[in-house]
Each structure stands twice: as structure tokens, then as C-alpha cells.
Image 1 (tube, rainbow, N blue to C red):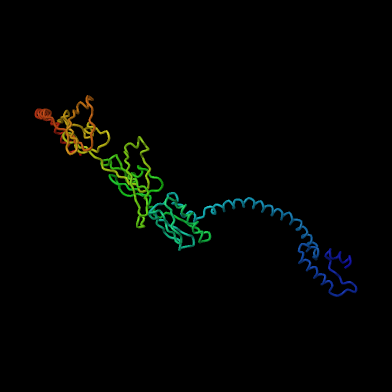
Image 2 (image 1 turned 180 degrees about the vertical axis):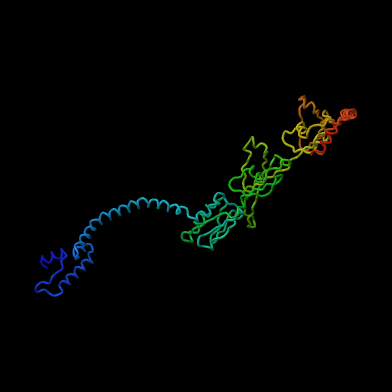
Length: 393
């Protein structure tokens, strides 16, 4: 093709048949132009038939480059800001899978004999179920030998079972939780509001255990509390091949009235401990006092204190000859105390002992004088006081 034809093609002028040319040459050239436009869309303006369309195409090519660069720059900037945030948020659920938290709720307390464990092996129902910890502190998982778990936490048992099942399974996922906490219990008996057996988690002190039982009875309970510690059972193999378990107990006495001054007496209890709150031994007072009856003995209780707590002496009482009957073996010996001298700080007060009986008898001269006062004045004050004292509980 000559240069004139090439210039016409660039200008978009339709071809004319030349001398000696073949008919249909214009259609052939046009077909070639269409195929060229299909292969190179950006060159559409060079082979088109309208110059204004070609100019618009060239302008679009100049504008497409800067616009494409701006779009790519904005996309990269937005991706740089959002990708680290998405990575940070996606890492949180992967660090703590839901199944890993299944057995972590009871992972704080060590298990012991009698506890019931709920074991789950993901995707393996034949290996899942409940396992009771035996007296020797061992469990018997399916398809595994007996395992010693006494004193281990639920999390440690999870790891041990996962390691053991890894010999049979590919990447096993095991969860363990304590379904029944039968090993961590204490018993509170005696003069308390609600005696019984109480389960606990974590640590438990003596005063906390008494609080669980509703507290001690202020009228009946003794301040001396007995604690029976149950050490872990010992086992030995007998001559007949049978395993024998021996449980020993140790007794410890605590005066709960001294805990306020000595906090170290508030002992930390162990699973299996038994707390016995005995009823306090009492002292008894009768005769011419406002409120005769029994009073709980406590350390340091004296005769003057007992009389004061009983409401004091009646007018006809003989305070100079107060009799105290004290148990001495199988008999009682008599102690006479002048309460008037004690109250005037002229004689030492008498410390009372359990089961003492205090008798305050009436004085004959006082009773005769009160009778004469009643006869001449008619006031009868002492009779009114005595009748009121008999009716007040």
C-alpha cells in the first residue's frame, strides 16, 4: 500500500477503487480495520470513520491514566488502615476457643476421692462420659490405664488426658469439668443454727464454716470448739492381697472467743474436717434474785457477775451468806461468800466453775422488817418487787 493510502487511512477517509484495482477492496480494508479495532480497542480512533470520535478517544486515554492512579492509591491507603485492625480483631477468638473454656470453670480446686468428673473428647462419644474419682485418687478413662489424679486440678487432668489420647487419636481435644465436688466438704455439728455438711471452693476458715451453719447458739454453745482433722487415708497391701485403707483423725481445740485478739486461731480448714460445737456447761443460781435460772459458763465468770446478770438481789436476800455448791468428784462442797464485801471491794470475788450451784437465801431479820413495814405503811413494796420478778422471764 502506497503513502497516499496510508495517509487516507490515518485521516479516516473512505477508500476509493483505484485503476486496475480489484472490486471490493474498500470492504476488505474496512474488515481489516474492524478486526484491528477488536484486537486493540485503544486504537479505535485511528481506524474509525469519524474524526470527532477519535479525538474523544484520545482525550479519554490521557484522562484514564491519572484517574487509574488515583483509584489505586486510595485503595492501597484504605487497605493499609483496615488490614491491621482486621488482623487484630480476628486473633482474639482464635486465642480462646469456646471448647477450651468448657473445663476451665472448675479448674481452681484440686480434685479428690469422691469427686465426679465430666470428661468430653470432641468427636469421640465412646471416650466421653462421667468418671468418679476412687478412694485411691485415680480414675479409669475409656481405652486407657488408670490414672492418678488426686490433688490435680481440672486443667491438669485435661492436659494429661489429651497427652494420653494423643497415642490413639490425631490431635484430640479434651475438656474436663468437676460435676460434683464431694471431696471438698466440711461438717459442722453441735450447738449451731443449721448443722450439716457444707461444700466449699477455694479456702475456708473456721469462722466462715461456722457462718455457713448460721453461727453458734449464743445461749447454749461453748466457746471451746473442737476440730477433727482427717488426714489423707493411707493404704497398704494386706497378706491376702487386698488393699486396706486407714483413716486417722487429729483433734484440735480452739477458743473462738480469743480469735478477735489472736487472728491466728481462725484456722484454715481442710476437706473432710469435722467441727463440733459442744453445748456449754452452765452454772445455776436460785433463791432471792430477780431472774433465777441457768447461765452459760464462760472463762472468767465470777459470782458478782452472775448475780448482776440475774437482775440483782431482792430486798429480803441475805447477801452476806451466799452459798456456792461446787462439784467435787461425786459430792459437793459448800463455799460461803459475803457478796456485800465483794461489792465494796473488801474481799476477792469468787471465780465460778462449770456446774456450780449458787443459792441466795433470804435473811430472817430483813424479812421480819419488811413485814412490819408492810403492816404499818401498807406499801408492800417488797412484795410488789418480788411478784414482778416472778413474772418477768
